[in-house]
Image (cartoon, rainbow, N blue to C red):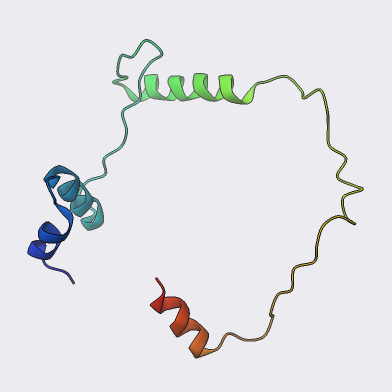
Length: 102
């Protein structure tokens, strides 16, 4: 586990607020959720108003007219290239290489 001094020296570079927000989120003590606002910019206070605002948002985003041109997917099978995939068991070497690149 890294020490607090390590994170401060590595990640603060003039931005301690972001560092402490990240530390709190990683520790599970605090989640900084974005504020939900009404269309006029005022913040929503109650849960009921938040749900109404989300409903309004998704109704506007998802309720749109049908597209003028539809794509024919049935005739696309000839144009799709076949992807070669290795279906053999994963080796320890492959796992070690994948983990070390993270």
